[in-house]
Amino acid sequence: MKTFNQLIEEGLQTVDELFPWDLDEDLQAGKDTLILDVREPDEYNAMHIRGSIFAPRGVLESAAEWGYDDTIPELVQARDRVVVVVCRSGNRSVLAGRTLQLMGYQNVRSLKTGLRGWNDYELPLIDKDGNEVDIDEAEEFLSSKVSAEQMGPDA
Image 1 (cartoon, one colour):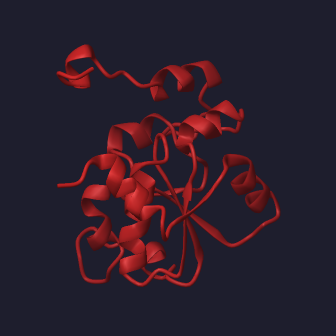
Image 2 (cartoon, one colour; image 1 turned 30 degrees about the vertical axis):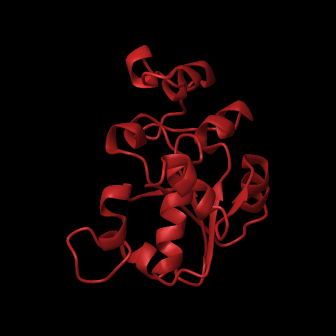
C-alpha cells in the first residue's frame, strides 16, 4: 500500500516542477506553453490562470485522447508542447503530469506550490466570467480547510 505522499514522491522522479515566477516569465516571453488545470469544476470556476484549459483529473485520460465525450482537441494535440499542469497546491498536478507522461506527453511539468503559490506571488487569477479575483479572496479560497477528524487518529 502507498500513501498519497508516496505517490507524489514517485511522480516527482519523472515530472519536473517549475515555480510560479518561472511560468510567469515563460508566459511573458511568449513561450508556447499549455496550462492545464486539473482541479474540480467549482475550483476552476472560482479562479484560474487566464488562458488555462480545464480537464479535471477524473476525466484526464479521456480528455487527452481522441474519440471521447471529454476529448479536448488542444490537449490531445499538445503531446510535443510544454504542458504545465496546475492544481491548488502542486500535488494533484504531479499525479496528473505522470499520467500524461505515460500517455506520451513529452514536456510535462507541474506548477510547484500550485495556485496557492501563484497567488502568493501576486499573479492574477480570473473567475469563470473573466473577472480578476481579489488576492485576499483567493488566499481564503485556496487555503487548507482540513478538519480535526480528517487528521486521523494519530494526529
